[in-house]
Length: 296
Ligand code: NAD
Image 1 (cartoon, helix red, strand yellow):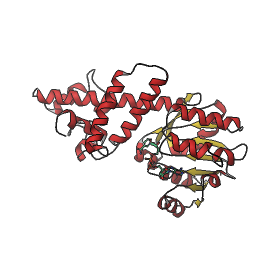
Image 2 (cartoon, rainbow, N blue to C red):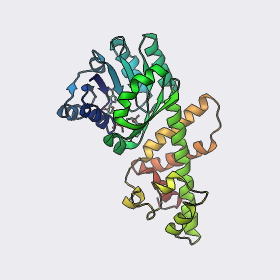
Image 3 (tube, protein in one colour):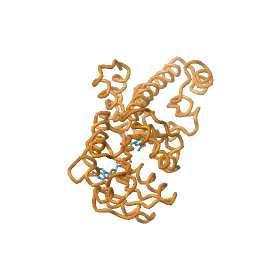
């Protein structure tokens, strides 16, 4: 069994760390929130006073932090993870962050001779708890091979997306598509309803026709057709508007760095910004259907 330093024990990281403990690994944990650390300790982890301590004398470091600036700080600051980790320590960052931060931090680790992968996830808090996350991994073949046994414990589908940063590229491109599809699906249900076609009938037709997509069949924004979708639970998240907005902003920034044309991605970002600024950042992202219908 391995010694694992785990940094960032929030909604996602708390469950991911728990799954590593349940698999028999020895965890040293750090978070700025005392309550998150206490919960991990109750589950069998050892508390650390800093990220540096969590990264010392371990085989692997896993982090699950809010954004690029936190990852840069935790890894690349003086006395950060890169300074503190012993040679041979594998570094895995699973946070969803901007592509340049991911590539810069992995390059800084490589300068010190440390292998590191970016390994953002999809699957949400439910997937983190159940250990069924999808991991999109960027890094060398060797680093991927070393990371995979640990990712297998926390996830179900583990993809090697290519070189450093490519995990983040896969994540932002996928979530930009998700945002666009959710808005398109919402527009279609609203149009059908306004023209006199009920949601269930439209669903039955479109879900077996060319409009079929995940936002419709697994997460339908109209109440009724998909019983498990947040639309049937007052649009409680789920995947919150502000989380979608974060990913759409990352996609927009990434597109700008390479002058890629993403007009629908940009328009989606504007619509989700409007929804968030109207005070609905905590609503499930499928709630955009209500704003598009003029109900919010
Ligand atoms: P969260 O805010 O619940 O957790 C982040 C944790 O990091 C917090 O406990 C915070 O105290 C800690 N933290 C912040 N700065 C720190 C530092 N310098 N040192 C140590 N700890 C620090 O967020 P989350 O929902 O767990 O999401 C984590 C990451 O996963 C984000 O990048 C998010 O975009 C991504 N993600 C989240 C979901 C989801 O459904 N929640 C799904 C996919 C991906």
